[in-house]
Length: 93
Image (cartoon, rainbow, N blue to C red; front, side):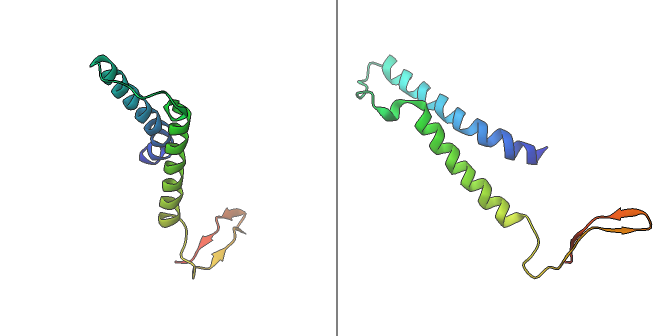
């Protein structure tokens, strides 16, 4: 459950939550009567959501690289059939 949360919900939800927080902040400033800057390309949600998604993608790849897999010195043994049953392959530790 935690893995599914970290792999699917966080990468999709965090950039969206950041967008809604930024929009809330902009609306609050407008309601207070503070001047808003001239709209620009960066005011659109897609660049911010895309940048946040790329950052989260790189963080996910780095986390998987550091936590998954076998050590470089491990020996791989392919799956074998023993007694009519398939024995899964794997790495020696």
